[in-house]
Each structure stands twice: as C-alpha cells, then as structure tokens.
Length: 295
Image (cartoon, rainbow, N blue to C red; front, top):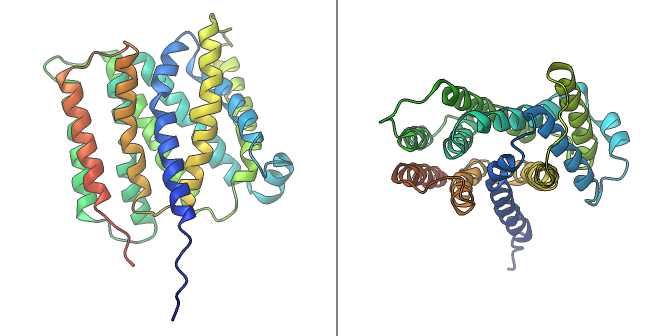
C-alpha cells in the first residue's frame, strides 16, 4: 500500500531562510559601526523605512495597511512594532558602549531564554538539557569578556543594553509563535509605523541628526533591506512554521558569523578569549540542538 510522504519543500525552505537570517544578522554589528554617527533610535527608524520598502516588494503585500488595520487588533500592532524598535535600538545603543563581540554574544544568548519561555507558555516542562545549554552559553559570555580586567562603566551599560535587546527578541519571537493570524502581508505597514514611531521619539528626545557620511546612509539602507527587512520577514516565517524545539537554535550561529565579519573588517582582534567564548556558545547551540520535539 502506498503512503503519501510529507512534502519536503517546507523543510528546505525553513533551512534556507534560517541560513539567510544568520548571515544577515551576523553583519548587523559591522553595519552599525559604519553608521556610528547616527543615534540608535534614528538608525532604527532609517532601517525600518528600508524594511518597509523592501518588504513591500515581496509577493502578497499589496494593500498592507488596509489588511493590517482590518485583520490585526491593537495588541498585535503594539507587539510587532515595539518588538523590532526595542530590539534594534537597544542593540545599536549597546554597540556604542561595549565591545561589539561581547555585545553580539550577550544579545544572541536570547534563544536559550526563548526556548525556556516557549516551553513554559505552552505548559511543557523545559528539558534539563535546555538549562544546561543556558548555563553553557552564559559561561561563553563570561569567558569572552576576559575578566582579568574589570569592565568599565560604559561597558556595563553596553552589556545591559545587549541584555535588553535579547529580552525584546524573546518577547517578539514568542508573540510570533503563538499569534494565530497571518503577519506576512502586513509587514510593510508594521515597519512603516515603527519607523514613524522611532523617528518621532528621536526627534522629541534628542533631535534628528543628519548622517555625516555616505557610508552611514549606505549602512542604514543596508540594515533596512537586510537584517531588519528580509531578516525579520524570514525569521517570522521560521518561527511560525519551524520545529519549536529547533527554531531557538538558529540564532546561535550569529555570534560566530558576527565575530568573523568583525575580524575580517579589522574591527575586532581575534583573541583567545573571543575564540573560546564563541566555542562555548556554539557548544551550547549543539547541546540545545539535541533536544527534539516529541512525536
């Protein structure tokens, strides 16, 4: 008797989008450094403008504003707008105060917290291996810091910003995972509303700053098209359609890609603590990947 095998194309699509997300997010720290003269909130607004334009070019997004207003309640607008703004603004601010390599690793330790909170939300007991992975990832952050020299006050501010960026990612990703309505057709509207909010906040609290160089403009546009445009859309698809036990593992590769990018760009020295910290975080990724969803 013949049995119909499941269509493998979604699996390959999720795998391909996961790789795309890792590569795009891996270059975010370097792009932020190219736009160092732009305040975090303003750079977030510029990036979200690019995200709105680039996501509008995707199929199925015609009439995004009408669709978003008709289909999504106020709390969806709040979550999908505030999540990207908070994660990007805290991340960009953290990169201005602390070493980029440490900021990236601290921020992208959030998948471990996401795995735990996701299990708790659906009333599934977290696996002991998940807690072990969390401890291993935190150990990687500590080793990367190289505590032979105490961090400065500015560095602590950067670490706090990185942690807040990671927690923003946890909340945003958890919402995407549990929210039942289609998000993809409304992304251009959400991104545009987020850009308006971010730029308004920057204008009210610190004043808008005209980017001083072509590289700053290029970095802002690249951030919008890539990490905060296609990256957000791809991550939304992966979270909503991927294996809930495997999805949190995906961003673990980001610190390694970011470290390689920063070293190649001459922004970070390839020190032994940096290498050891990345290795521990990758081991945490591998340990977490051993957890599989039950049949």
